Amino acid sequence: MPEAAIRIEQVDKRYVGRGREVVALDHVSLTIEEGEFVAFVGPSGCGKSTLLNMIAGIIPMTSGEIVHEGRQVASINRRVGYLTQADSVLPWRTVERNISLPLEYRGVPSTERQKRVEEMLALVDLRGFGKAFPKELSGGMRKRVALAQMLAYEPKTLLMDEPFGALDAQLKLVMQQQLLRIWQEHKKTIVFVTHDLAEAIALASRVVVFSGRPGRIKYIEQIDIPYPRDVFKVRFLPQFEAAYDNLWRELSPEIAKGEDL
Image (cartoon, rainbow, N blue to C red; front, side, top):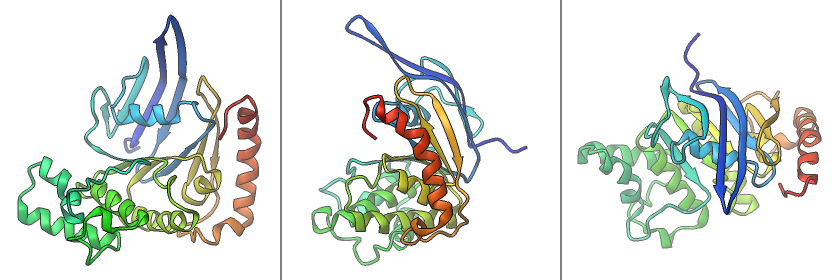
């Protein structure tokens, strides 16, 4: 069997502050295969973003092990791309210079950088906007710049923490469709945190439900909807309704404990 993209084994995360211990994650184990699209859902504070940060090597785990692409994660994981809800686009750099930034950090020669930037502009449908500054772009276009920036150095694994949460409903659908297209074309592994259950079902091949704190994996739903998917129409399919009912049945008691989805 090929090595899984991400293997999470018995991971705990505990914080100590003001004389008491808070358990954020408790004995979490999960395997994510190469090229899989997995969504995390759960109540606020359940540790799903914490787990994403541990895969990225941003924060250490208290115990357990995370292996990414055959290597144990023990420090900053530079082999993943990470996109958050917050806008990471630098306002003083043009679109093309924002996209080229990670390539500059890696010492990629200028000719190769320019070629890669042009490819990314085409990939996210921003041809003709390379010389524009972020203030001249819409919110959706800025998010495309951030997506292109993340993809520029070709990570095999993408970590996405509510990346479309700040967009309006129409722009969110457009970005979801674009993400699915990129995922299918480039065979990335995606781990996607969202508070939107419908978004999780529309995008992911598997949806993982976390319990309220301490965060544990409570339930996993395999989404029985073939790709390619049309996010504008997928919500009307009977498979979507069945998956939503199953997931909501597991999720709603966790929300009822006092946390909001």
